[in-house]
Length: 208
Image (cartoon, rainbow, N blue to C red; front, side, top):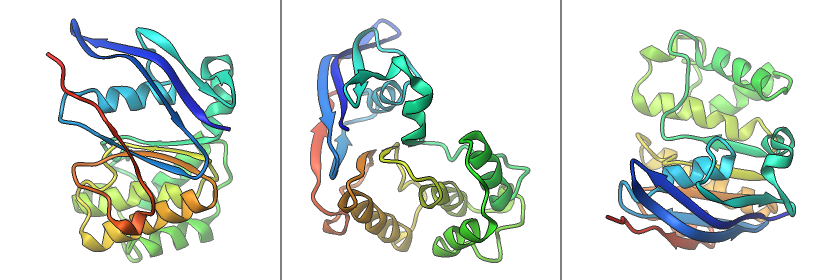
């Protein structure tokens, strides 16, 4: 059931971000990916999701290369990038409906409302997200975590623009996901608190 990266190499603009990188993400494990800007954290996440190909190496899920059946892998995956990936002309509720359709999942208005309620967006669920603050937009994107049953979460800077209450809510969700046997790899510019549960640190260095 693990997600395994074997001997990955990534080169951007003639600079080697990382080479022969190997790691594994196991059920019940939270990995905190650390490193300065430019070290390759986002590039590694995109390779692990299957959205980008490594210059060398292979990513495996459940013992098989993810490229063998990328659609099946994506059913087990939630990836949230550094940007919230919302349509600014749609409301938070409409964005969730659209995203769930992309995931081939049924839209349940009650479940969507409950997720937005947890995130403090009740009363704001039906207005265009362009009218929301950066923190509210981040919360609207994070609502996806409550709506798709996925064992693998790959999150790039999920705490961006969140206040302390939002960070606490998200860390608590992390702990529940991992306790239920889920796998989570996240980046952040701030350390995870004990609220998130046991954490395995993984460091990437900036290479010239």
